[in-house]
Image (cartoon, rainbow, N blue to C red):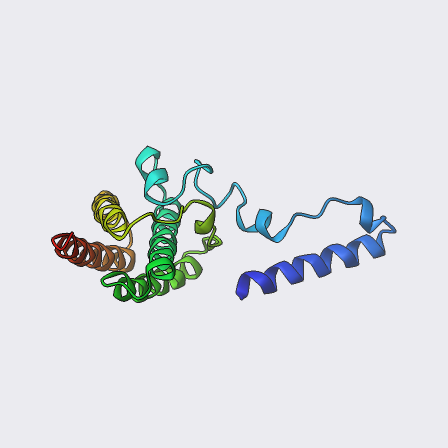
Length: 189
């Protein structure tokens, strides 16, 4: 919501300044909302990869990078597990873990504001394919949580503020619980 207000304010100032300077507003190039949110100043250096995959390749992590990769990975998990539920109905443990992913996103979101980092849009649907089977989805869940845990362990080795360290620790522990749930569910297949 705050980002939309900022965009509206920028747009209004742009139009006003164009009018006052007699510049043809339609000829000027105005950045889109998406471009403003993903400016090079605040987005990770690797723009093709997101979440844990981008974190794996980033050799110079900044606070903004870590928060961005973390929330992107939570977006990806929420979308991936939501697709499983859409295709196979309310399947455990996916239905329970979706609400946990929303909680994780809610833990991370205020940190972007506090540390003046642009909150990335949820583009996870562009990266997720529909699952073929429940077993395949559970196996992907296991692998995803293993990689998520490794990402948070790497982040926790960095020099980061204590509130971010607390959130990353909480999310790492939650991923361990999700991993256990997926592994238990796999024993039935």
